Image 1 (cartoon, rainbow, N blue to C red):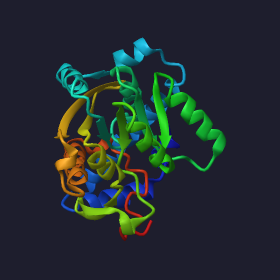
Image 2 (cartoon, helix red, strand yellow):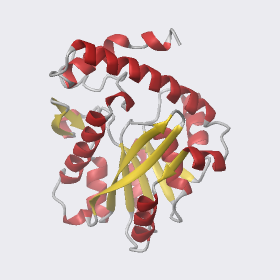
Image 3 (cartoon, rainbow, N blue to C red):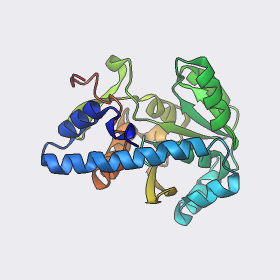
Length: 259
């Protein structure tokens, strides 16, 4: 636990200072300490996901009944369903739920790590409950698959884009921030229904998923409108319970913060 409580402390502190300029230092360090507690839980839960059963997982992370009804309704439309989330709560377990709660073929987009051995483990573990993993470098192949059948696709959309020239820039937590807009473009191309996925931590090891509709007809949206709505939903979750977001990554390394 001592090692967890010193993990990337400088990065976390810088992120919090820039994101919450109106908060006193005591408030920021309180958020940091709570983040460390949650992050320790997250590491344990990620390890547990290697062997967790479907039944236990469904007990520990549940789709709220209203959101389940929403998902079933949208499955009947014949449109693709895009679920978009952030590095908030337990996004790893949430990606499992995508493959468990739908009758549709399901895909989860991921950023391939540089270590191929770890990538192999990652793909095997995350696809245990039926969700197929698709690397961000395979989006064209995904688009071809989406031409063939109605599908559900999950995106963790708050990673830092390398190509900032083609990213979507917006004010996020008071900082001008680049976001991937690939899910926005793909949703409009395929006229997908897009849902924001809010992951609420109920207790240690227990979560609840709620959907918020971003759009029911993505083809009718203008460029980056879907991405902007996603950012606002994520920002609200973070402002409500900041300790559950991934503060230990260099989220603003291309936005001017010198880590």
